[in-house]
Amino acid sequence: MEIEILVVTHGRIAEELINTLKIIMGPAPALDFFPVRKDLPAEQIKKDYKRLTGTILQKKALLILTDLLGGTPTNISMPLLEKDNVEIITGVNLPMLIKAVHKRKSVKNVKKLAEILETAGKKSVLNCRDYIDRY
Amino acid sequence: MEIEILVVTHGRIAEELINTLKIIMGPAPALDFFPVRKDLPAEQIKKDYKRLTGTILQKKALLILTDLLGGTPTNISMPLLEKDNVEIITGVNLPMLIKAVHKRKSVKNVKKLAEILETAGKKSVLNCRDYIDRY
Figure 1: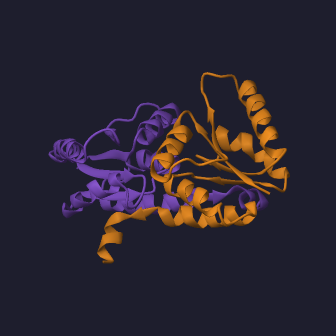
Figure 2: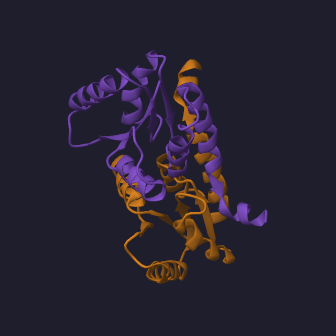
Figure 3: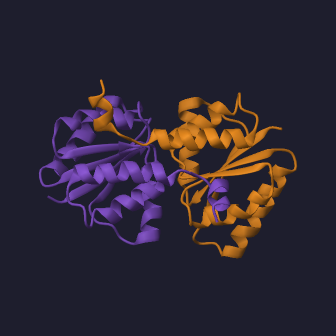
């Protein structure tokens, strides 16, 4: 089953991560974002999000990348974990997103892809002084 | 010595991370961003960045948070590690930025602050299914 990647964050963080990804990697299909806008009522956001994810899940598995544990983007995603073909990784950053788009070409199982991204995301956070001291 | 936090990324990622931080935490002093714009020549970017960081370093220590190891925002920051009062953490995400602004209130040493953020950044990347299974 094809895996859709959906980046869900406060405001325009998700959109800007994807803009940069496309500059670096070129066009990426089955990659979308959902902005949680502070000017919209919570009920409207939940309704829009349910509609979007429902449409995706008719045909695809879904990997959701969110910004912050405990934040609205993660909270509205959590109920989707009742489904077997949805996984959520929180703490999204640019290297995690690049890895997600790259690894999805070979890893077709969404649970396995999520495991890879958790590890890759953690590894991508580096103290650059320690890094250059190694060489 | 006061610590300035500078978020340096491709395009508008840094600006959007800071916009969201301010919605969550309120106004944050000594926090700025530098966008690496693809429409500007590399020499112009380096010159602007050198001027900005030079001004900051006249009075403050500097903690730089960048998006991606090997990307231009990190590459233009690396030479600043020649100075003792500069540290760089790459792989910036929203929880890392929130932790940086919060911890800076009590941690006044930039090296110590960088160590805390590397750990916090790694911990903030989570597989949400594993997380809910723990409870």
